[in-house]
Image (cartoon, rainbow, N blue to C red; front, side, top):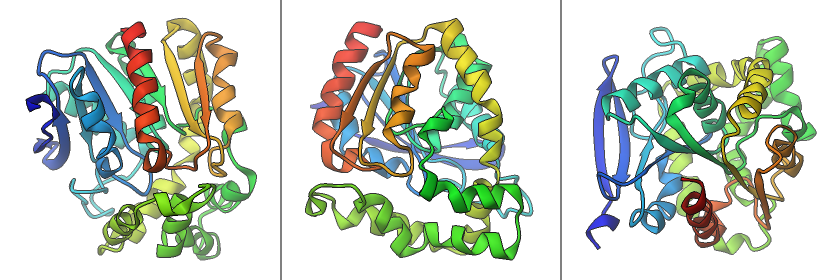
Length: 289
């Protein structure tokens, strides 16, 4: 039972507090969980205990999210390069020389930047609606974001602000879920409360505006997949309209042996399928590591 206990810790990176959850034996293989938008390591609350008997599971909150620091955008550049840089230094501080990645949403471009910088460290990748292909972009969901990326104005910002409004956050959790009563309101209300804090509007707009930098890296990500042959498991909410199933299937173009499972779930598949995903991850990592 001791290995199932979750520790809540904080370290300082570049003078900024980085909060993280950790569980599992100190000498076990490491699984680094990187969350998406608009969530935090809270999204892994059900998954961590299901993996901690076998793995050292570590889930940080990105800067600007959860319980990590939220510096003023005038003093900190909210870009994916910066998030990845902070995360890389976080792994250095914890002495994580080898780890498997679990990436979702924003965690995908953040984690894949780590893989580009330190490919020798990444033992395997689990992607849960963590996109790396243009085919994965849902046309309707991405239209306002692409307009913002092309030109940031008050007019293009307005529809994007709706994405992280209370209704927009709730939609991300419930849309495409066959039985929405299985999704705890605590999940989207937790995110809504965090996003409502002072300064968050500009933080989120800055990050969303920078998403185009991820598209520019897609060819480098694909080359990394082909050259490294990294073992990859995709566990994907098939009803996600933000990152659609074609994004999961596209991994096989560069990693023909990628294991792909489309689940009857939405964008936040862990809310309804944590047990099933944990089983798939345990089986996959048991063979890959």
